[in-house]
Image (cartoon, rainbow, N blue to C red; front, side, top):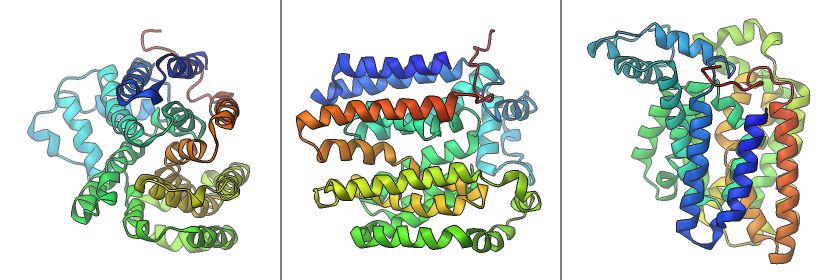
Length: 357
């Protein structure tokens, strides 16, 4: 845990030292430093740090010595084809386990930090949100989905500039790494309609979905053979009710806070509108996650936009004096959530060790 907390403290210290909001150049330097530090931290980690890291590395090692044409020899019942090609290519280049962890880290973190640089008002808050809402934890072990999520982040300019063909192509590539990425398709079509009325409807739909989520989702996912085992062992894979209700409470509280502080009436950038819409979708997804772990997985495609919504809310709803106090309060709250919910007692990522230890 010490390594992770040290990284977050370094992020906050660098934020004060560089003062990223003064210019784009300072912001670029700050974001680049944060990326390099996280890239090194995760790339040099031990091979058992992360929930599924060992499983992915074992599959990677099975492909060692593969020929160029072998890159495209795919297993029909294996992982999604996009991930298999990525894995096989890395094996073809002769990478060892650490090299592969660096390759995965690059594909996951580069799009995220570019996204933060382009759209976040307070990059340090965005990074804290990434940790607090378990996205960093997922990046250490759930390789396929986090690669898919990062690819989906690259579609934001395509949504804002209304380029449907490019958007569908990139989202399909993301889906070739993890099938849950196809849920991201809905954002292109919903983006033009977000307003306060839709947010209220989202909360209402979530309240209805809470008791009937399993009934709605089961027949849909039973059509996909590879996910049958989630239903055959539903009690083992059911999302914790406490976690679901906590997340539901958090998202609804943020929506209420944005209403109370007049965020809806503020002029917002196109990306801020998109992020607010994703927050609404989070409410619905989290309510369904009460019953089904695959729906919980889909939440990440929308919850990542809290990295934009919270900094934007902080910037637009408070004057300079109050902004400082709320920024400090929000920072402490996110640190506490990160330490208590993501790190403390998490045997998958704690203790952190380097690969040589």
